[in-house]
Each structure stands twice: as structure tokens, then as C-alpha cells.
Length: 107
Image (tube, rainbow, N blue to C red; front, side, top):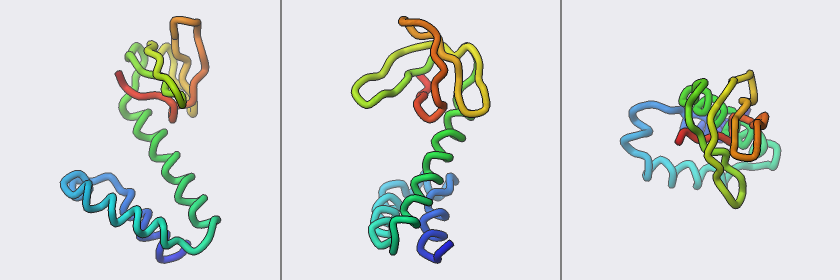
């Protein structure tokens, strides 16, 4: 992993400092992302960000919780029935669906 990517990974870390300086850190993160040297490095950062989304979803969602299933153009309210490793079974108005955790937001 390159030094630039290590810096970006460090900026993604979720701690008190990041919360206090969110705007400032976002500018720095965007600047460093634009300076990455290759598509492979950027792909690695994207994969890490996706993992972070899943971890945050797991931490904030439990069975019986109301959630939004977020798609490109809409958000649908549902209830979590079961949480699996990478997906959750969510009861929506249209029926039950197996939804990736990265597509869920706590309601």
C-alpha cells in the first residue's frame, strides 16, 4: 500500500478527532484522493469505504429495527427480520427481500 493510500485510510478512521473536524478533514480527504497515482489505488480506497459502510450498518441495525432501503432514486421503509453476514432480510410493503447491508440506513 502506498503512503498516499495509508494517509487516506487514516483519514477514514472513525474517532473523536474526525467528528470535531469533519469539514476540514473532508477537504483534506478529497484533495488526497485526487492525488492518488493509479486506478488500482483508488479502487482499493473505494473497497475500503464500502467495508466501512457495511460495518456502520451492522452497528446501527438490529432485528426488528425500522430501516430505509436506499436505491438510486428512492428510499423504502421496511423492518429488519434477520441479519446475515453481508445481507439482511427486510420486510417491505412489496414483500421480503434479501438486501445488502450497505443499502440500509436506520430510520
